Image (cartoon, rainbow, N blue to C red; front, side, top):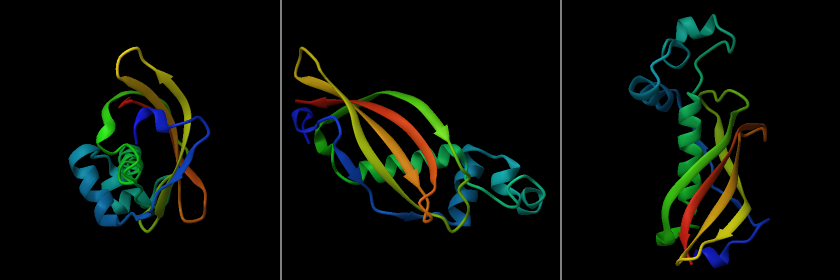
Length: 141
């Protein structure tokens, strides 16, 4: 979609993605090698009683789900900011995540572009919000 097709209050819903233990440990071993993501025995003794996904993985899955809607298409130029990032609940192996995306701001620029800001809210299969954040991107008019 071009910049002029976005408007405040517009809402999109993504497909769902299942998070597996293998997804969690693979991501964590490369990008967030902490025990709560990798060591099942030690994680069982911790606050969450088992392995959980990295918050960074949850953010990445959220972004993937949003991009895969195709809403930006080839009109997106670049991301400009991420704000108010909040990891609200742990994501466990077997969780099924989907994201609800709401356009919260549109700013027209003098040139051929505009900035679209969306609030990304990711939920598990029980409709519990696990992640929330704002993403701003530069989009062609």
